[in-house]
Every structure is written in C-alpha cells, then in structure tokens.
Image (cartoon, rainbow, N blue to C red; front, side, top):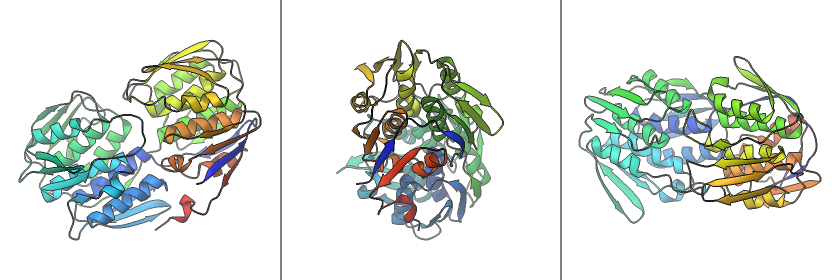
Length: 426
C-alpha cells in the first residue's frame, strides 16, 4: 500500500493551481446518463473517485473516456438499470446514478453505497423525494430498487438540506411531467454547477443556490460540453498548508466566493489572506489565536475542511471548540493526529483542541479522505519525519497532491508507487 514520507518544518512558498471540484465532477458524470448524446466535461480531476465513477457508468452501458482534465461520456447505447455492488461500495457518490437512471429508463437498481467511514449519509432523503415524484421503492439483498412508469412533478420539502438528495432530485425532475419545487434545498456551489450543466442540456431550472429550486420538466435532454468549477476543498487545504508551515502561497483557479466562511474563520485565527477574482494569497507564520468552529451545510463552514483546520487550531494559543453538525463519525482521525503531538479531546459531536502544539513526526494512518489531508498538513509542519499510511483515501479526492506540494518546496515522497493514480488513465 502506498504511503507518504514527509520531512516537515519547511515553509511552503510559491503558486499552486487547484483542480476541478471532485464533488461536482462526479455528479455531472452521473447526470450525463439523462441524455442519449455525448457529453464532454473539462477541468475534471484525475482522481480515484472519477475513475470509479467511470467504471460505474461503463457497467451501466455508457462509453467513457477519461484523460487528464477531460472526460467524454457517450450513453447512447443500451443501458442497464443496475449499478453493481463491487463499484458502488467504494464510493457514496455512486448513489447519484439513481435519479438519472430512473428518469431515463423508468427504473434503477443501485447497491447501498460505501465510501469514507464518516457516519451515515441518510439516503432516505433521496428516496422520500423520489417517492413524491411517483417512484415505487423497495430494497432487497443490499440493493435499492426504484421504478416509475412516469415521474410527475410535485412539491418536495426536504427535512435536511442534503446535497446528494437535492442533486438526485434535480436530475430526476429534469424530465418529469410538470413542475417540481424542492424546498429546503442544498445551496452548495456544486448544486449551481449541476444546474448550469443540466440547463445547457436543455433543462429548465431556476433557483439553484437558494433554498427553493424550481424545475419545469422537459421531454428530453441533449448532450453538452461543460467546464467543472474549481475544488473549494482543495483550495482550502492549500491555504491551510501555507498557514501551518508559516509559508507564502498563491492558490490560483480558486473562487473566493466559495470560501467566504472558511476564509473569515482562518483570518480570525490570525492567517493573512488576500482575495482576488480567481485566486487567493495566504501568508502564515504570525501569532495564531483560538477560535470556535461549527460545521454546517453551505454557506456554513464546510465539514470537509473540519479535519484540516484542526491542525491549524492545534498551533494556536488557547483552547478551541469544534462542533461537527453534518456527519456523526468525523472525529475518527483525532487519535492519529494526537499521535503527532496534538492534544484534542472529543465528546459526542464536539472536539476541544488544546493549542500550542509542537507536532513531531510519527507513523500515522489515514482513516478517510479529509483525515488523510489533515495528517499530511500536520506532517508538513512537524519536526522530523512523518509517515502517512493508507493514502488510497487521499487519492480519492486530491489530484497529484505530492507533486503540487513539492512544487511549493515540501519534502514529501510517495513510496511504493507502482499503482500510482496517474498511470490509470483510460
């Protein structure tokens, strides 16, 4: 299994460009199933989750070509309604083929999703919404079966602004009869990106980015060409890398409007952040102060940056409280961060971060994608050598992370790279 070996204590300096958003690209790939015509997506990150989604779509019957920065999908042949267990178990985003398959074929059979072990992501929000559109649902042997002769628009009031449920329902409703109104919808930038993509295919969608989205169903959708938005989580990760190493980094390709709450919080901690139209510049090395943080759906503080920001809070003076309001098990990495010298105590969905940490190199294991990123950040500012194992989790969401960090001056090596993600181009 590949691992990172990091010699820390080097301030990162230079310019790094963020890739396309993982959490948008995967949904756009699923949405391509709504048309029988070819779709071309640009600015797609070459990461393991994109490769997995490509395999899912191929198993369904689409022709998929993945190359650096670009994905072509031709779903014009005969499609299967089944998304197989072996692939869906690797990645929770696979559940998002359910809405497009239901809309295109009138039925879908999707294995219960897997992915990072960070707590339940309740698919009942997806299913209850699809039922409102007229779908019949049952489960058997680890699969979810949905079927509808015709989907018909309705008013759907989500109990929670689930990003995945909002996306699945937008896709299913795009070709449903009549009007669908999604109340308490998720507001993430990735929702807006999906709506723009579907609109370019011929869908009629209004209100994306607000808590009320209106979809007027159309008879069919065409293929489209679309450029994926930048990855706000990757941008935040590099901003934190500059901060924790006392560096000076320009993060290009980022959209500062997608990072407003995150940026305001790290400024409160003491990080110098300058924002421009399409990039941010971050200088670290000053005095850092304790700050309380609570994760919330967008526009709140992103749960995907909760683990990485705890590295910065560990360097700050005083005590900070981090409250996780999105996922139940997202503190599973704390024990590993404590092995590097952090002093963090958890209780339920709260974590108390005791500051003034001096990280020291050790052997640690990534428990999930964002936990892995946090351990890399801690290794970058630790004294001595840090070994981060199980980095296949990191490969799911960060494109060429070690090369980007090396470009900023980091001493980081990937060991046992025979199965490197960049060799998996199809």
